Amino acid sequence: MATPQARGVIYIHSAPRALCPHLEWAVGGVLGRAVNFEWTDQPVLNGARRTEFYWEGPAGTGAALTTAIRGWEHLRYEVSEDPTPRSDGGRWMHTPGLGIHYGQVDSAGNVVIGEDRVRYAIEIADGDALEMQRELELALGSAWDEELEPFRHASDGVPVVWLHKVG
Image (cartoon, rainbow, N blue to C red; front, side):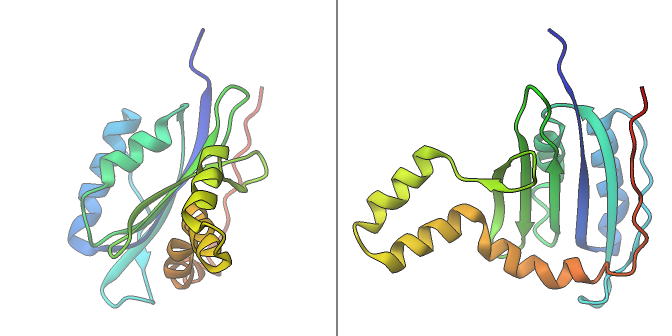
């Protein structure tokens, strides 16, 4: 059975200028072709650059892309992979202070918390409502979302490119 094709987006919210060509090389290595990002200044962080890149590849490419660009601690990024009829979607977020967070994503783009993770949160909370809230926020990646939100809005006004698959 052939691996289903997936698509997604890499949002590099902030990267030092010197790292930009290395990121293109790493992403191109995963995709098997040279890529050239359209870099713009990141107004939230002086001297940083940002980009968005739409990709297509076999299911699991999102995880491979995340692996290829992890380890550069000065990066803030998100990688998303849309679900396919035979595979779950995913969203990886990285900030220098928090590291990487992964969330499974459903067809509507919602982060899905698995049954085992909910059971773990209940066990850890042991009846404490505030601890339960903390565990669920951790599972949802709330701290990552809060840190990345100002960097996301820096792209407001950037033209949106819609991808359509024909045939």
